[in-house]
Length: 360
Image (cartoon, rainbow, N blue to C red):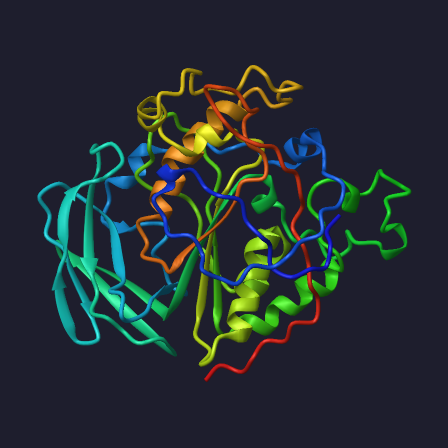
């Protein structure tokens, strides 16, 4: 279940996240009964097996694609991808040819990446195209907008999706019948109306949802694609969507908004820092699932998958220049002398009726 109180308030992130927090105005939330960990894990799909061999070919990174939103001036947007070692890569944008920097990837160094800094481009709804050229091959992107890009990350509170068009039942708002989708994990208030209204924002918003994958080491790339809101639909983070939608609606002048969702529920806060950072903070407990949790995880692969999530996918999200991060840490490790923390359980809010402004 979800309440109707606008964009979500956030918890404080671990210091090792290294991303600027959102400066959006604070709002209040009403916390309904927490969903159970079992419900959330049952909803969570199993991670696909990642393939390291796919990074060798000349290509754009997954988070760089047609239909994306790039950071507008005064920032200089970054486009990047993969190539063979020793290759030269040129990026052509608005008649200007830019020589890309080629170097080992920042994750493990096993792959070779190219990276180009575009000239600062003002925010607008003009659709741009660009090309990357190497060794006689040309890659093209189209429908690229410049505006504000935000990364949304955290645990199950951020992962909580809008739901499905039929999951919400107003006559069961108090969950007198608990065996329904809206009373477990993944259904916001008036989900059908919220999902239907996403099409009103297709002209100026783009969404990217990082695919879940398992890894014990940082990943050179992620899985996902940029989609307009109507094509992403109810699987997207409710908190991230409401934040971006409301921001798009109040900015003056209106500018394109890109949202990148990278989250995984049920993770202790330690899993959002690297093992090296945990050791530097002199935290004695190993970097595994805390043994003091009141109930074991029903998904035995969750701890391993969460570690890869924190170290791998969040790192790749940071490769895209953005305005800031929306972070919701709804469940921290139990408080102890070695690992201070708190517990707080809420679910994302909903607010129907926000109209999309006309792009200008």
